Amino acid sequence: MDPIFSATPQHGLGSPSTEQHRKEAPRTVKVGVLTISDTRTKDNDRSGELIRQNLLWRGHEVTAYEIVPDEPSRIRDVLQGWIDDSAVEAIVTNGGTGIAGRDNTFDTISALLEKRLDGFGEIFRMLSFQEIGAAAMLSRAIAGVANDTAIFSTPGSSNAVKLAMERLIGPELGHVVHEITK
Image (cartoon, rainbow, N blue to C red):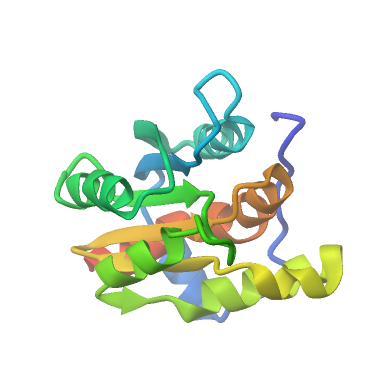
C-alpha cells in the first residue's frame, strides 16, 4: 500500500442498496486530472501527483493529465474536450476554487454542469472545517455531471487534495460513475 494513502473504512455506513451499488460499480474508472494554476509545472505539481497516485493506487486509469493557467477559456476548452471524449469517464481538478480575483474554476465548472452534487462541496467543507477551522468556508469545491462525465473540483493545496481523494472521491468514484451510466 502506498504510505501516502490509507484505506478509509466504511464504518458500517450505507444501506444494503448502497453496498450493492458499490459492488456493481466499475473497478476501474478512466480519469482526467487537471491542475489549474498560474505557477505550477509538471515538475512541481504535488497536488496533481497526489490525485494521480491515489487513482492508480485504487486501480483506476489516468487517461489524461494537464496543467492550465486559471483562465476560464483555457479551463473550459480542456474540460469540454475531456467531457466529449469517451476515454474520460471522470475528471478531477485541483486549484482555483477560492475567492481571489484569479480563482475562476468554480464559475467555469458550474457553467458546464448539467447536474450538481452539492453534497460533495458541503461534506468537503465540513471535513475541512474539522482540520482548518472557519477558513474552510472560503473553499468553493464543487462536483457534478456533464454529458455522463463525473467532475470533481478540489482546492489546490496538497492537504485539501489528500482529504478529498481519501475521504470522498476515492471511496465513491466507481459508485458515482455507475450511477451516472446506469
